[in-house]
Length: 418
Ligand code: LLP
Image 1 (cartoon, helix red, strand yellow):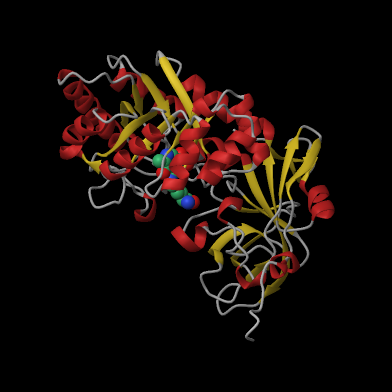
Image 2: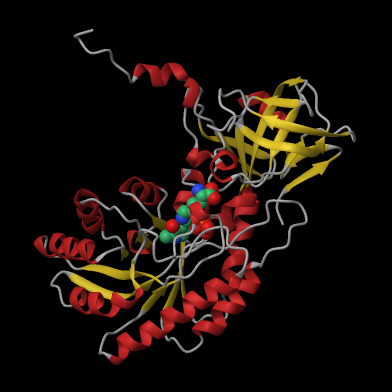
């Protein structure tokens, strides 16, 4: 359930009509609903209430906007970060350092050092090499870094190849069969408090069976490590739960996921950690865009909108589907291709799509754009960086300004030899 609904024929974000935001801020623009963010955070937490001890670390990469992070901090979430930039954002939003998990396969020494000094709560180690480095950095400062070892369970999450992370040939984690030996060596290092294991098999997961299999494997590994004398107090199960992108699409719900997790972890006696991203932010945002023109095509018309693949990269990158709806539908329907102005054919949001009929100047909304939307935006074709707006009941505020091409140009220099 989200708070983007039609009222009197106009698509609203909570109590704010989207045309009001489009007029005031311009298009394209991302619009987030605070009530939806809070609802999703609560639904997810509630779904896991059968698990005794839990920790929720919002996957910042899905939507790192400062205001969004502040909302999630208010909801009691910590953060899962994958760069020192994301860690700084989480801290700036007021999340306690102790509630932050630092994941990521390429943490640099500088990043590790800054994070250790900031008191980051848990480092999810992606390799033995990283663990050795982290321990050295912490020990040299008279500190102890708290960590979990990320293990690659060699389970296929059954999602898009580009967002699968749990197969043996993916770059993430240490190989399952090597994990006990690596754990034992790392746990012995001065400067290292290795307290648990971490796993994350992929994103937009639409079938719970692979997750169940991966978690069960991790439970077995945990038991083996305990039998070998290690104290395992934390198990991080990552994120990945998928969300419906098409109206009417049926996916496992947070409650289904929670029931599965509760069953698998029933006798674990640990703090179970979660890193949800998309399930919190995905349906909390839309991308509002204006139709520049409707152009005749060989088969179907091209609806050319002022948003492009630089603003919403998912269709171009993963052939992802986003519902496109008219903000002020007339009731008419059409079959069309929805495209952006960028000069490559991958700048296509929808092909041969049955959708609301729209005309030049009309507003459209791309649904389910709150996760991996603005955060993956760039300025290709010297386009502005897309702004973001947060709505709360009948109020709204720009929470990220549009960065215009002139500002970006001003950061470039012609060297003196030219
Ligand atoms: N934890 C780790 C270690 C991750 O790598 C990710 C996502 C998450 C948590 C959060 O996953 P979520 O709950 O959001 O599925 N740009 C792609 C998605 C990339 C996901 C990367 N890792 C997309 O637009 O579909």
